[in-house]
Length: 460
Image (cartoon, rainbow, N blue to C red; front, side):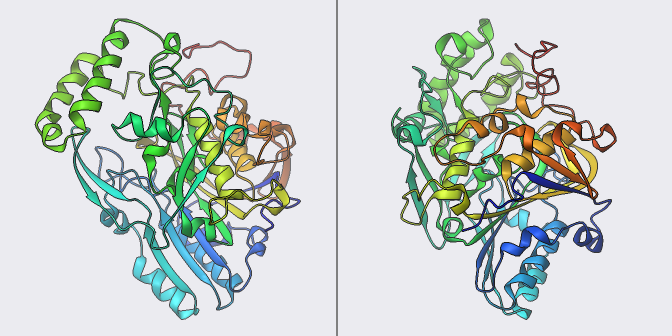
């Protein structure tokens, strides 16, 4: 394993003016791919969160990783494998996504032919255990899926091995990805922190992360670190926020008022006892539309941890990165040595990114960049800077160098460097001409785009 090499704190930022295949391929440096050897099992993990922008099925380029980027990376990998090895492209979209519609965006047959012609095994895998049908934001049908053909790996980060160590679990508990809060809280009981992840991913020799650069409601941005939510086979094990407001030890809401005092208990009751039953959920789904009119739509009202005070999601994100780098196929964490972590490459699709109400309803932003590196913390710090945001304001980035057990990086953010079109800059000195301002998701506005020590705007 050679995942964290001497250039781990350096990130390459190359101009890529379009999704023309030759342009994309030319913007990919060779150096990160040198870790791939003939015979390796290589996983490509794009951002396939959903087939299109929510409520706008004709828009997708700012939501998911572009096919031209995946194709270019495939060429690089095939050159290194030299006719021996395996390539798997895999992700676990949100449960309401339609994988069949997602695949229509991609040249799957051409990828299969390309790999077969080079003598390399190829597969595309939907990691999810279930796909949901939703109506008005309510789950009304659940369909079981085969998931990872190699199975799943259960990893329990106990005590100080998890970033939830020292986080006082709120009296109302954590909320995951489903209506069954009890299941999420059994998985994260204050000592144990259970994650169910893809065996294909864990057993890979090289992991290539291919995120789409976007803003994110719960994490500030979604890039390399956040993209690992997609290696999960069961998302209800992932704490997304803590129930209640700050006065109740939670981060679901930024404060207490008449709306939140009514909404919090009402939603817990409805989700736990009514929406979990599909027949009842189908009958009540129109009520959700009425609820939005009364309590406000999440597009302009902060709820569900969709703000900069979310003190839960970043812990889950960093835990997942620990699992990727250090977990074995038996679920046991290997030695805590960064130089022995899983081989890792990050290629960020920032040709067209997404801002505003990300990740599912983001507006397109043309940045015209491909960003590559071998460490997710360094890559995310540079990408946040290129978006006009402050990495120290994004917990998944700022807290990563503080990790003491199963380190994700062994450098400080100040040591990160960006090589922009061949010219190297310390991260704090990336020129303004290289920055494309993104609009934060509204729960992060006035915070993520504001230096430390400032109290401009936001919900502070």
